[in-house]
Image (cartoon, rainbow, N blue to C red; front, side, top):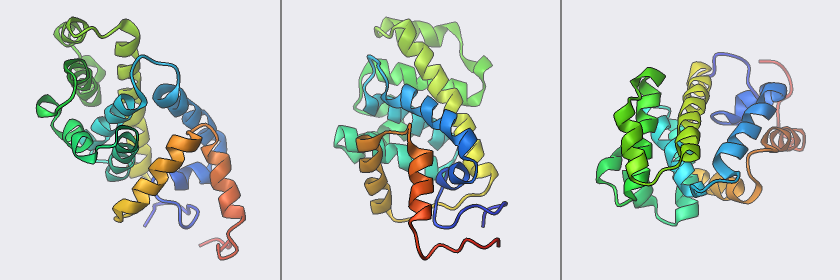
Length: 196
């Protein structure tokens, strides 16, 4: 049960976004730029970074959501699962392993990132932009994870619901998400609009 009166039927970050769309808009725009904007990292790789950080933060909703999106792009749930939980043994590139190691350090604390982590990523051909974006994705998702769990939002257990939402994000992106959530709420005739 959420700690505050969030809109019914919207799991994870979707409930707080519909509750406060004016703060949701810049957050979803940031997610759009980081996860789908111009980059030499693929959307699947960036979603794996987000999912890895969410796994480490034990945010089940975000970890499952972003793993599903990464798997939608990549077409392989098993690889994504291993990459987000045990990246060093996953069948992914050495560069992505190095970037996931940086992301894991950022999740612990920004000060946990050391020169040797950056040197490892550079040795695997990671650019300054890729290192920058990895750090920012990890920092942003630590915030998103705490937002979701700090309000005790609810987490669906049906894996198919995450796959369906993953396809929607892959198709429509993050940028208009708050407006889409509000429009869906307004069109739901069964929605109880009275306060709890």
